[in-house]
Each structure stands twice: as structure tokens, then as C-alpha cells.
Picture 1 (cartoon, rainbow, N blue to C red):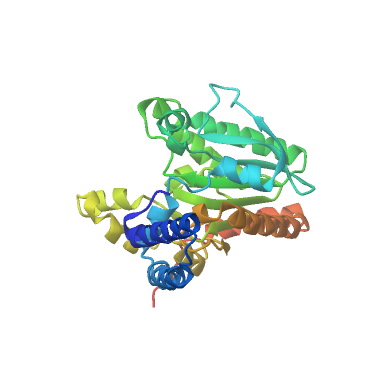
Picture 2: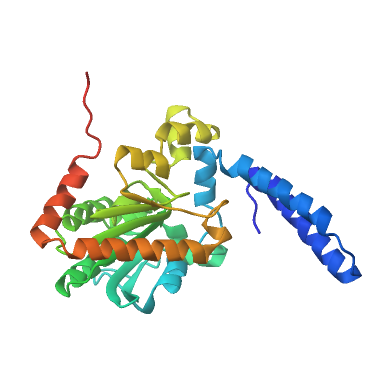
Length: 317
């Protein structure tokens, strides 16, 4: 398993425990006392590391290459997924996928950013950075969901919208701005979940929702820590300081009222037990769909509008 720098003592000890287990089994030697001591030491080290994660370490976990992506969650928590393609204007953006699916017996429109597992797939998916056509596709399908009275489930995992010349020529800023405006008027429940990275307008372009949920080790920020450090300190080396200043983790976002609920992850992150996290997420989504479906549409839209208008308000004494 890929290890982050701060996880290396854990990975090394896990490897040693597995080595002892395999050796004892092959040689028919009872090494249980030694293994038990190492396992106790492992739990102590895990507690010391994972109970005191810094904001920057949580950002690193959110970017872990083995972390579940949108398609992984779709396969784990939904059935009958039918992907839909294209914005009917330019192309089909593979960085943002969408389609019909069922969560248990609830029909939904599900969409989200998709990253790749290797270089070839990352190039195809543009590293999860959507183009304007991705956001236009998302809006086209949200309007379709509204027409058929289907709840919309959005899974957010992007460093940000793609800033290339072609994307800007095709109206990247306009596409995101239009989505922010138009999502506030979609008359059907919308639930957005940040499953990894929630970067800037790239996330907000599909994130104007009635409920905003975040996984425990995900982050949601107006700018990446590296980008912030480059602006404030003229060096991306200060990314850890920037992450702390941005207060972009789930705990901070809950305190500020930017997100509504946090889904727990196992120690070390979602990649250590994807099925467990998927089941927590599924339960949370179904609960919120049920609650929001009972709200009259006029009240739903008014509450959604107020929710985002009040973010960032402050008072001075």
C-alpha cells in the first residue's frame, strides 16, 4: 500500500507483523506472543499519529492515490447505473461523470468528478479537473432530474476546474457561474458530498446543494494550500502553513456552518476500508434524501438560497 511520509512507521510495523505471521505459519512456530506485542505497539503508534493529524496531513490523505473515487462509490452504494454523456454543445468531459442510478429503491441522478488510477487514465480524466463542457453536462442532467422529480447526488473530488487556454476560450468561468446561479433554482433535492478534494470554483460549480456533506479526511477550500502559499509566501514549500491558515478540514467547516454533516472514516483514511465508508455514506445519503423529499419545493429553494447567502457573513464588535 502507498504510504504517506507520516505513515511510514505504521506501514513498516504492519509489514513486520505480516512477515512474522507468514514465517510462523510456514515453519509451524508459535510466534503469537511476539506478534501480540507488535500489534499493541502498532495500535499505540496509530493512535499517536491519526488522533493528532495536522490540516496538511489530512490534505495528503484526501489526495491519497488509493482513496476511493466517484466511480468506486457509485459501484459500492448504487445499482443500475446508466452513464449519460455530453453537453450537447461541444464534447463529453470524462473528468465529470453522471447518470441515473438507484440507492436501494430510490432512483437518483448521480454525478461527480473522476480521477484516474494511473498516468493514462489521469490524462483521459484530466486529473479530475473538469472543462466547461463538464459543467454544462452536469447542468443539463440536473435539469433532466428536475423534470423527472429525481433527487440529485453529487460527489465532489477535484483540485479545481481546468485552467487551460482551451477551457477559458470555451467559457470556463461563465459555465461555473451559470451553474452556481442555476443550481439555486433546481426544484429537486440536491445533496453534495466532498469525498476527497474540494477545490475552489471547480467544486462549487456542482456544489450548490441543500445539504453539503464531507468525508472526515476530505477538504473544501477556496484555493489549494500550494496556491495559497505561492501567493502569500511566494513559495509552495509553505503549503503546510497555508493549510493551517485556510482551516479547510471537515472539523473547521462544520464549525463555520459551511458543511452540514461529516461522514467518519477509519483510522488512516477511506482507502483502508472503502466498503465501511461507502456504507456510512449510503446511510447518510438516504437519510438526507428522505428528509429533503418531504420539504415543499418552494421552501426547499428558499432554504438553499439562504444557506449559501449566509456563508461568510460576520460581525465586528
